[in-house]
Image (cartoon, rainbow, N blue to C red; front, side, top):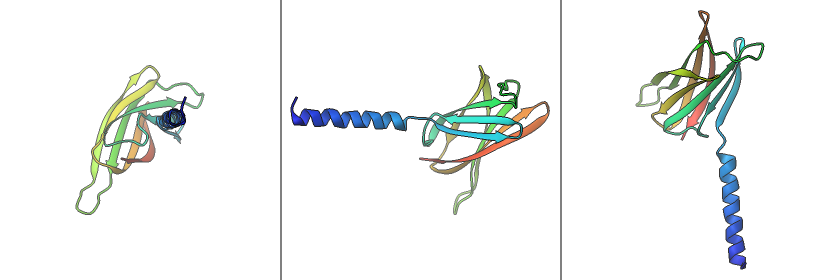
Length: 132
């Protein structure tokens, strides 16, 4: 194998490793009231357009919560020459996870709120992302 071929194989290997490391989902874990909530977005960083979001909720005894109504609200604050943007979507239960799709309409900072309603009580988890 020539030096040029070795260099090409080495470069491709580095790019593949970097791509695998970069491919990890965007992940946030937080406590929301009595729940432990884990949110994953399938793109890291989130992008303009469709982003799939998966939400896992566990109670204090570490059991999955599968009897809640879960909403995802995402918004961008007002900026000069642009009003605030607000969207909502319901998350559907699939197995032990709640799944939804967020369509981020432009790049920049987004505020995300996961609302969990169970037994008449609503709890929320907040976090921010920067869409590209």
